[in-house]
Each structure stands twice: as C-alpha cells, then as structure tokens.
Length: 114
Length: 114
Image (cartoon, rainbow over all chains, first blue to last red; front, top):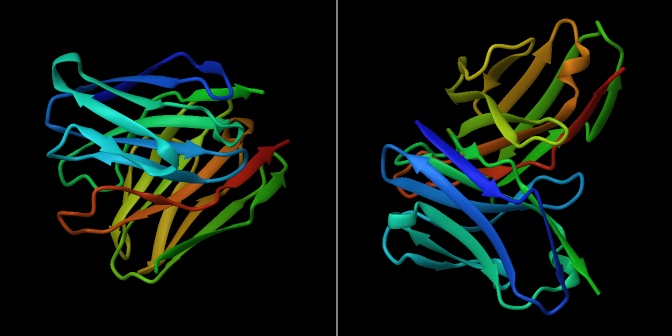
C-alpha cells in the first residue's frame, strides 16, 4: 500500500524567501514521486518527478526536490519565492508501471507575501 | 502534441438530477484514462480508471459511474446526484510505455449540487 503525507496545509513565505514544502511517503514498492501545482479552478501541472537515477530532480519554474529513501521524503524547494508561485501544491506517489494511478497528499497551499 | 479537454468547466445541478461529464484526449492513441475528484478541503482521490474501450475499474464505491465508448473519450455519469457529489472533477491520461510515468490533467469541472 502507498500513502503520502504533506506536512502543513498552509505555508506562507515572503517574496524572495526560501520555499520548502514537505512530503513524506509510504510505499511497499520502489516509488515514483511527483509534485504537481494547481492554480485556482485549474487542472494540475507537473512540476517535477522522480522515477530512478539521480535523487535530486529539477523541475519547472526553479523548483527542485530531493528523494531521500532513508527518510522516505521528497521535499520541494525553491531558493527564492515569487508572487506567481502562490498556488496549491500536491505531492503524489505511484508504483512502477502504474502510470496515472496516483496517490495524492492533502495538498499545501502556498501564499507569498510582498 | 497531446491535449486533454474537459467540459463543462462549471456545473450547478439540483439533487436527484442526472450528470454527464465528458473528457477527450487528442494527439495520442490507446491512453490510460482516469477520473479524479477533489472535494472541498481535501486532496485528490482516484475514482475510475480505464485501460481500454469498455474497460472500467472503480477505485471507490460511490454514486457515480464511468464509461469509455471510444478510445480517447471518457465519460463520468450519475443517474441521481447527491449533495456529497459536489467537488472538482479532473480527467487525466497517461501513456502505456515503460517511460510513461506521469499523468496529464484536464482543466477540471467544478460541480455544485444544490
């Protein structure tokens, strides 16, 4: 079985500050891990993913995440927040060859203060 | 390139009325198709997925049903809506190859049952 826990349903940062959104997962098989972003009343856009190989993955809009197997974590970071980063962020897990069958976390709403 | 279309974008329906949400994918063939629901204040939950025409798997017991009458068409239906069916419904697709590891989402349909 797989599950995802996102710590903090709401995170607020100042513009230019570090963004850190936390995600821990549980999986009985080697996981594929994803971060998606959702703007109000829109669908989900893939920010980045980890499948195999390098554990530090870079995505769009300056975001990156590091897969840490020993900590079962996949935290999302961005060095400097921009106002346009305000959105809801979802961490998700799937198993090998599961395609779009994703288990999502509850989401973290990111606010960026000017 | 591949695109996914969902309609309508918003829908207000009375309790007990029927429902039909449609999703189509362009630019790919034989995709896996998914319906997710995002209830207020909650994460996304997989409702149905389909690996081919007429092949539907239900992930959670509910008042809804899904059908796939054509390769790139996925329909979400209900005969009689309940208040608890309100939410944001997202259609998604994924490929079938070993490198097709993520889902691509439509823009969603916000359903309000009154």
